[in-house]
Length: 590
Ligand code: ADP
Image (cartoon, rainbow, N blue to C red; front, side, top):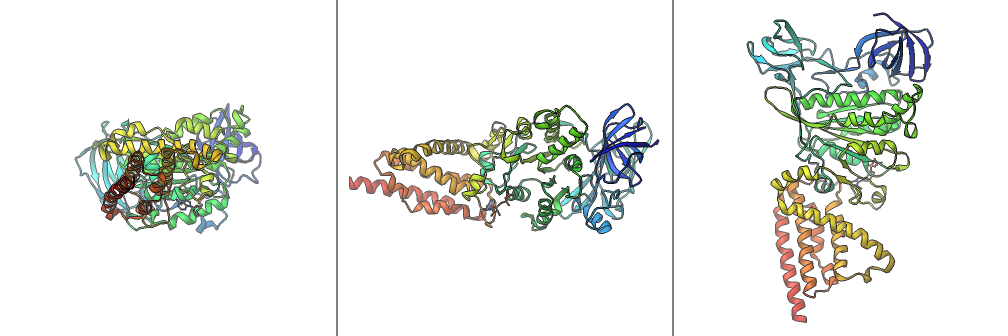
């Protein structure tokens, strides 16, 4: 294809003329060094190119080579385990070939061309297959069975299929299409990152993505296939929340996109993630994780590509019928990259210098989340849940990126540094967080955990809200000014906060709560509250209730292991007995 010529270099933005044959979002190779770039705007024969590598030293007149292809990722076995940069280059291989400073123009494929994978066919010659159907499987890691699917747009009769050890580029099957033409299938396929992968139907997200974190699962649940946003003021425990989600969320595949805050933070992720253990299998969590990291020696423009690379890989596993959770940290950095490019393109700036299309881009990204019926005759369902972290300057939630995000996501976990200072973890505020999935999930939750649970959760939230109002009064006139029933509200709120919401990620037992355990813990607290209300009516002083020693056992109940939940039931009986004795004692004294 005819090459173009650089006429201007402005940081990561390069403008080239003579590019009439390229389209927006095509990949080009810039200069003799073959730096990777993507066309982001065309004016006549002039292409504006976002270059994903350091552009220092590039000069006017240098050649630009079109590839005629959009920015794409390689899909197939081998995606799990390597750590990728924003354009799917395996970082460890780059490092071993080029040392810590990435040599520019390095071109390493996303999938290894040397590794053989054991392919087990699930169809035979003569079978009719449709797009999305499973041709066979590969055990990608001990934790992930990789489905090799008929690529979208292809279908017909299987003429040949070969099991055994294959490279991703080997032909594993031949499919004769309706048009009588043969189509050779390899385990590897490609997909343009800016185009959502197809599915049959989008379904209503009506099942919770359980996370084992009580404040989330009980109060602010996210649905499988849902979207959530979490801000992370420094030291608020964002990293711990992310690790907890990666470990415990009910998802078979985790995709973590790190849009580097600062270089060293990214390094932390690269060191920490590989050390996490999958709690269900005891294997390294990396065996079901895809990690995409923009390292500090890549220019900001690469952040822009990384979120698309990440979500495309996530969609691919969704298409296999998996529950996939993608975490992007931080989408604010991604938006800043957009702002920088937009500024260099001299586009009309919107709010705070962000481009006017900021909101559209953010919405398009989150719209790729969802629970879907996948392509394929078996009508399997897959889900892609997306959790985006935002980091507005100064923690200011009126920031345009946060606002644009909140318009599209349905859950907001409000991490607050105030709570973290008080050592309340996870520091997710019960007053400002929300989940708009609650009505959708209600039917599933009632069916699985009963009406009482739903009522208890609503009651608990109301009590916490009342506590916030009462705190104001207490600050002014002191605790003693409160009536007995208000005092009780304060006591119960404290118990909800400390005995239920507070969850220690580093405690072997407390780190995870099953739904069953959560339900039982809440029952304990609410039983105590209900019996206390009755006792107050019978004239028991609130101070006596507050000093009951059984409250300590309620506080410790969260440390009861999952296999001994009957101990919580036993404790319930004891609470009832304690109150019977207390009211009797008060009655005889009177
Ligand atoms: P951030 O990433 O927001 O800067 P971290 O996630 O590293 O903050 O958390 C800071 C510290 O807070 C942790 O080292 C830990 O001591 C404490 N912490 C955070 N979350 C929890 C939790 N769920 N349980 C116990 N301690 C926590």
